[in-house]
Image 1 (tube, rainbow, N blue to C red):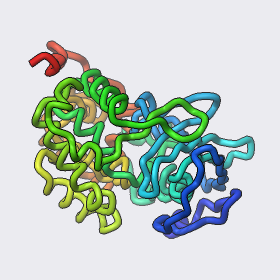
Image 2 (cartoon, one colour):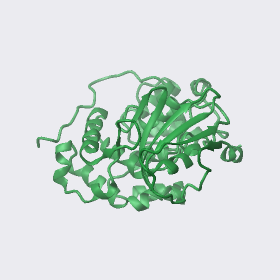
Image 3 (tube, one colour):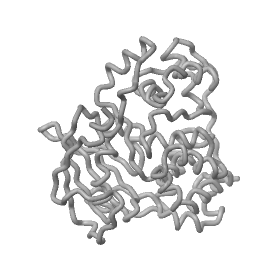
Image 4 (cartoon, one colour):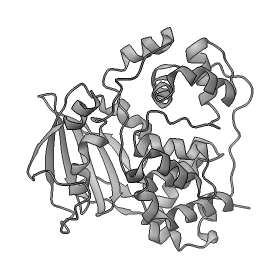
Length: 328
């Protein structure tokens, strides 16, 4: 089944399919390129891409399509995805990274995501899987731009992380190519050369700033890590100071579509998993891993199902307090 899916996703468009790694001539940001992907099964675009953050500053749902900007190995690009009247996936792209994005279309929308070995062992998981028609694990393929907002989310609230990311983009990003008003993730070379005092007004303390600097200075190796296999990619990621199992798993779920990615150390996920699988309102990481053990190889898929369909564990006690660093 995996082989069939890797061969699936026939592409039609105004340019012939190319190798993902093939370099292209520079394209004008205003030139629109198109591609149609013939899908081999249902695709729920919104739920599939929710794992990347649909409301993030580099993504938008607008005019019946899902827009996403990216800093590809060939330069900035913007892509618009929509399901056409035929049920196939229509893609439009702009910028120097347009061809790279269009060439990655099958992986980007989870067309190669293989769930053939996934067996639900809990009634609740079986029920969630039935409701998840069209939900896939995307593999967007650009490590550093995915890592930046994940690093910013370490040990702070989602609101604080989002605010810092928007400020970072406003100051060091650039306008995306194409007809949509969105920014592109900053050039890693620009971030790598910044002193700490440029991060502080953005609400980023020294620990996360140092991690961002290490990520951007290792951008070349990180963006090619997945090509060397998932085990190697995890080893490279966690070999950088400031990146542990939570950050690496969150990144690999989005960049490589890893179905076994488990973000150990998350504030909410252990409780959510325990509540969805066995109706326990609270759980440790150890208890979460125990409950997910039967799903070895597909644990990340279960977590994704829980995040989308599992509901929230009962809330007890105070919420994680927001932290502000700008004035210290």
